[in-house]
Length: 339
Image 1 (cartoon, rainbow, N blue to C red):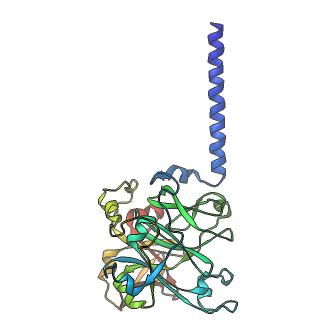
Image 2 (image 1 turned 180 degrees about the vertical axis):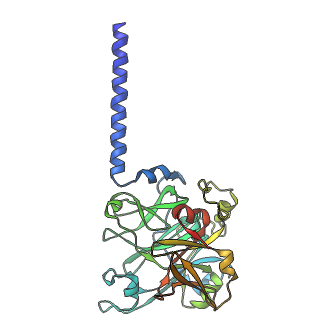
Image 3 (image 1 turned 120 degrees about the vertical axis):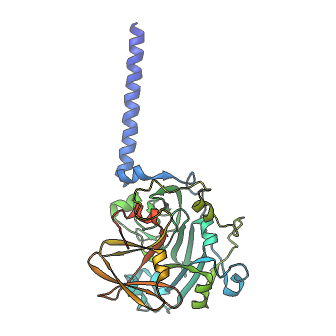
């Protein structure tokens, strides 16, 4: 009986020590920057880190060559920026766009990244004369984004963590393995959280190949020669949207719109607003429309080539927008207004 009692005490002691060790590791993990809210909302995506492989050595081809396999209706993500936008010394994107830096000649970078390729890899780590930037796409939430490749003032590339937060891709960086939300460029885990560092965004648009090439005849295009044996004629996103794939949106609590409605989301002075794509598509070409975001007036304009421009009326400042599914936008910005 005495021996049995001692064994029970030893078992209890082992359980207590194990619990303390687990809690210590968990607390350490939380102290490393992963908030309790993020920890609770992170869900497993494709299984493990790098379960979807980024393109790290992209090759490009001419418009003429791309015409042989891209249809005018195919979706591409277009990047059209002055090369100075990538030079770290320049400051804000607006400042970089207006100056030539350190004797470096200005050069406009015009690149198209077909969705049918990005859907397979989600991240393309690219560069211009040694300045790194990454073009990203989350098939789960439908959002494309581009970032300057800098983390803690060091050159960085990005990869897929295999995790999802608010139905959005979570990336990791090559410098310190902080985790980043793809739709916003905000950190969710690691040293970057403590520094309150956000990734620097580059303006990228979602459009069709036909519209892009007509406006950017000098464009080059991400090649299908990626080094991977993928069939890029298969559009993976079709499976996500139809529910046949392994992903589905997290529990949707905001039912003001259908979860899979496409929206244009903007932010002005800390206020967020979503515009259904059905409304945007109904706008007349070349006509300005006025709306309010918070207490500020916003101008909406659909250019002759079909591109949408949002700007603050009082300052004329052009506003960046995110294009994606309602469930992802409302999951990230729960306080959003809706047109």
